[in-house]
Image 1: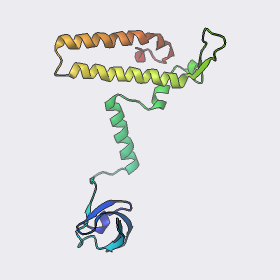
Image 2: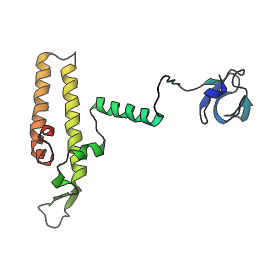
Image 3: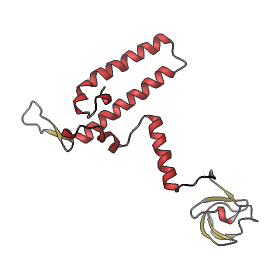
Length: 176
């Protein structure tokens, strides 16, 4: 293994010493903390190998943080999930900063206040999970057409039950 492929904290495996963690890297050697002791080894001639999966990206000309951000955004979108701040953008302006207050019938019990942004985020997450469920049901190869129709009826009823919360959305196309 070439020394330039090592990184601090990387998990490695040596044929004689077993598993270890890279603690320091020099031009032609590396200090590895093995279970029994810290040793200096020559990575190219000692048979040192990575003990964890490795990834190599080439031909990419963008900062690593941007690559990670794009990967996470793509994954969230594919799963039908949103970041909390993304969901709050759909909240109508008149509700931003607002609170929902629940008063129990019994006056001796305390009222419950919930920030509307938090409540709205949970509503949007339910909508997104229903959308993913709907896609999975429709794409499922093991279900018959009648079973898909039956499951779709339940999903539609869930959407119908949630129409009360449409008043919170800024844009009509986001409604249930």
